[in-house]
Image (cartoon, rainbow, N blue to C red; front, side):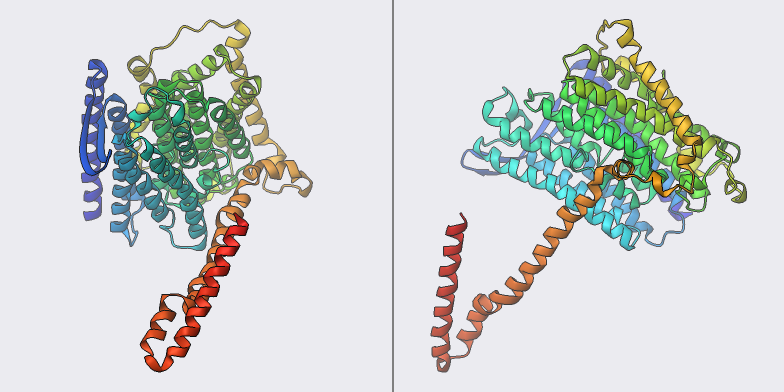
Length: 570
């Protein structure tokens, strides 16, 4: 009871904070005002290290939805994590996670932004390895090392911006040609955090975390940090990286959609759908649609959190099963959760008049209206069809299909804490798309031929039909024939071999080289010719003067040949 009271208290605090931030966001948007608070921490010559907080309608709106989803996840965790021994650790880690995201949202300065950016990576590692087993450890290592690549890009950008003496994003005003390298580093860092190609392998692996953490990570916190950073930069800087973003984002969408059609782990299918939607946000940013990307980011956070929480209820009621082939008939045993699951899936697919429709459909139509290369448009609409395809496949496997395992689990909807926590998100996933589109964006007038106007509808209907066909076909049955596992199928189902490449090149090679360096350096040559060997020779007294001279000669020879090798290599 005491633990539940803590969850309820956190839920109320976050809900009140979310409502307050939303009202402030509406006020600053209506008045076109913003407040910037600046603390000067350190001054060195013409450079000043500042801690800055920018409070405008973008940060207020986004943090309000982050707090709303965080409050729902805290309330949801009270029942889902019931019986957990390390409950206090879980609460503190979630609070640190939300605090890091808040610091990132309000920081327009690379110095202060790095605190939230690095905090997200560190706390996400602690949350992924929360269940202590080797699978969680491997997933956590892949997650933290992939995110460290982005941290390095931010650090290099900080060093590069030392040339200008200003680390705020306002330094990019004016689109100076000398800032191209800085913008490239920021975009590369965002690609790692938002898991775009070639850094996509860690996002499905992070599903080793508890389901409430997955709901928070994949909706509004960790994976959205990279997109939000590019949104902040794109508001004031005219990108020269539009073509790069467009190619990588469309390839990511296509790869994630293709992989989700072959995946049987429920949480991994939803994770791949997150990856696909992140690619859509990056694609809209490559077109310069900054407000549309922010709008889709917020709408996606709502229905993706609902989707993960509904899936968590189904997994929790199914005694921990996550395999789609062992699920089915939830429409009878879990009617309310099945309704939330269908609503969130339909919003993800862009069902008219749900939250995802008002942003997704507009991005697709604008892509046909602007000058976009044919290959990107082809991959974009193929990915849209694949999205409808795997969402229909999910609904069929979990909700519609009658299965022998579903009748032996005695599932019950009930009216528990997890059910109540999805009420608000399901309501917002239905009505907030239309209401927020009136507030946040100004819909442009788009004139297209009828063939192009109906292209989105045709692609979605085709994807729905194909999704229903592959759900009932023998290709998705439990006993797949070996001949079906051709190279192309394996290539598509394994995210184009990216998990294998990432685990080998990102983890194995650096760790092996690091172990060799420690063995041959710290525990080898440096034991005799470093500071420890020098101190031992000096402490032995004057009687070992000859050995000291010998030590000096050896050290001189070692340093000399090291310099020669460095000169030859350079």
